[in-house]
Length: 91
Image (tube, rainbow, N blue to C red; front, side, top):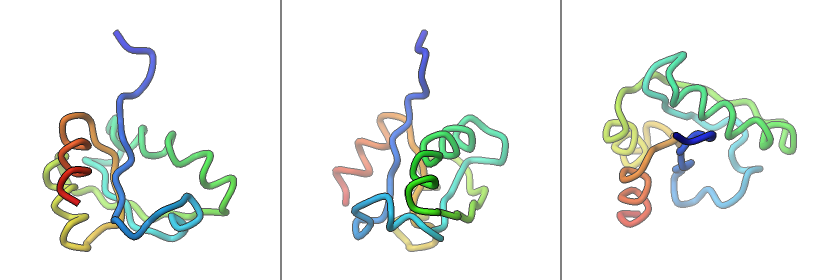
């Protein structure tokens, strides 16, 4: 068992730092899911540093969210392995 969430933050290639996350659109599987919780937890520190506000969209599973990033419909998401690794290698 793990005592942490095993998510990677995946964003569009042009996003290079936490300040650029302000006002961006993020996809989660569904509201209240572990992906939603993981996204909120991961970005909590970033919001404090950048005054970030984000918009969330319930999109579906990890392949659907990665496809939404590639098509430009969202700017980021969280993903478990192997989807995060695959997303990094294809960008």
